[in-house]
Image (cartoon, rainbow, N blue to C red; front, side, top):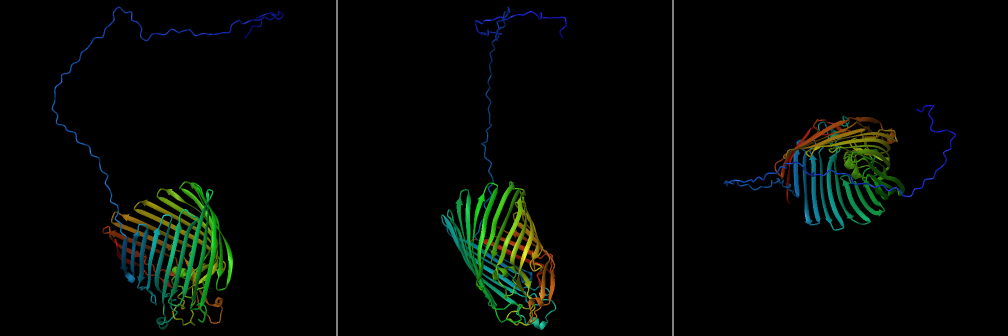
Length: 570
C-alpha cells in the first residue's frame, strides 16, 4: 500500500527524452565449471599398500565309478486306425413275427469309380389285437448306383426296385357281420422301378444335371409314370453369383376304378400334369451376410383338360450373423408349384385307395423368419416362425362306406383313404435344441405348433396342431452303445360317411371322428463283440399304447426285436 504523503516526482516536472545507442550485440558465454575429480590425490603422510597373496591347491585324485545314463525320449502311444470294411449284413427277428434284414456293399471299380449295392427289408405277421382283417405287411427295396469322378466333373447312375405289401385292415367297429368280413379281399401290393443319373461340372457355367424316371403300379391295375429333369447354371457377376435353375416335371397315370364316392364303378380316373420352370436368382455373400434374390417362374399344364396356367413365385432367402456363431438371423419368402403323385401319397399313407384325384399344389408363399446358432460350444438351437398360404393342399380323409360296390379289392368298406384338396393358410412355430454332452453322448429335442385356417371352414383333416420328438445316442465305453427316440403327435380330426345312391356327396350322412393324441417311445441297445460282429436289441412302442395313427388303424403294442450285424470285405 502506498502512503498518501510519499511522491516519486513532482507532477509539473517534464523529464524529457534521451537516445541510447547500442554499439555491440550481447553475446553471453559459458565458462568451465569446477569439477570434483573422481580420483582425488591423497595428501596423507601414510599410504596403505595392498599385500600380495599367493594361493596354492593340494590336489588328490579320487576314483569315480559313476556312469551317466543316456536319455531316452518318451513315446506317444499310437492308437491304431479303425479297421474299415466294404460290406455289412444285418438281420433281426422279434414278436408279432417282425423281421428285418439289411445288406450294403461298396466296391472300387478303379481309382476314380465306385459301385454301391444296398438291400433293405422290413416285414411283420401283424396279429394286431382286435383287428378282424389280415394286417401283415412287407417292404423290400433294392438300390444300386455307379459313380465316377474325372478331373473336372463327376457323373453317376442309379437304379432302384421296391415292393410293398399292405392290407386295408381298418374296418369300422361293429358295422359288418362275420360273413361279410370273411369275403373281403384286403390285400394290396405296390411295385416301383426307378432309374436316374447326374452330372456335376466344376469351373463351368453349366453346373449340374439330374434326371430321374419312375414307374409305379399296384395290384389293382393302377399305374403311374414320372419323369423329372433338373439343370442348374452359375456365372460370376462382379462379387456376386448369378444362378439359374430349370425344371421339367411330368407325371401321368390312371386308376382302373372310379372314386369310392360313386355308387357305380363304371369309369376309371386318368390324370396327367406337366410343369416347365426356371428360377433365376442373384446370390450375394459377405463375411456376415448372405442374400439370395430370385424368382420362380413355372408354367403348369393339365394334360387331361388341355389347359395351363403361368405362375410366379418369390424365391428370397437371407441370413445375417448378429453375434458370430451365437446368433444368426435368417428368413425368406419362397413358393412353388408342387407336383403330387400316387407314389408320394402311398409313401405318406399306405392305406389310400386306388381311386385318387391327382393334382398339383399351388404353394403361393411360405414366409419364415428365425434365429439359430450355438449358445455353448456343445449346445445349438434353432427357432423359426412361419406363415404359409397354399391352394389345393392334399389332405387324407376316410373313404365312405359304399355298400353298392363289388370291386376286386375290398377298400370300399370305410377302410381306406381318399385325398381331399383344400386351400389352407397355416401359422407355424418350430423350435429345436441339440446338445453334444461329449463325444459319446448326444441329445436333441424339437417341437412344432401349427394353426390352420381352411377355405372350406372344415378342420385340416388328419393334420395335428402339435408335434414333438426327442432323440439320444450314447456310446457306453468301447463295447456298448445305446439310443432312444420319443415322439408325440397331437389330436387330429377325420369323419366317416356312408354312400347314398343318387345323392351328392354333401348329402351323405357323416360322423365326426376325433383321434386321440399319442406318445411313442423306442429304444435300442447294442454290444460290439469285436471289430466285425455286433449284436443289438430294439424295442418299439415301449408304453404298449394301442394308438391309431389313422382312423380305424390301430398299431402293434410293445415290439421287441433282436439281431446281429456283421462287417466284412467282399
